[in-house]
Image 1 (cartoon, helix red, strand yellow):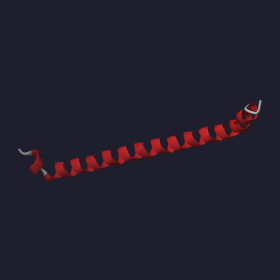
Image 2 (cartoon, helix red, strand yellow):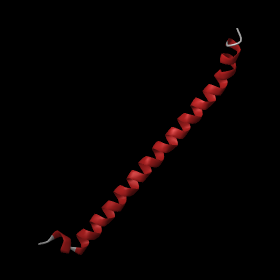
Image 3 (spheres, helix red, strand yellow):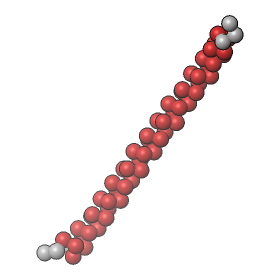
Image 4 (cartoon, one colour):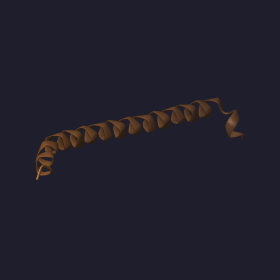
Length: 59
């Protein structure tokens, strides 16, 4: 029996491949959202701290 001749198995493998692809894209999307969120937090922190460090440089 050749596994590639079994149409039902071929459809299941194609579906599995699609699902794994979607999972990889979802993981990438969640990772990018987390990076953007952390970057925004860092920017907010840097902006909040910037005037303090600017005032210290005047001495």
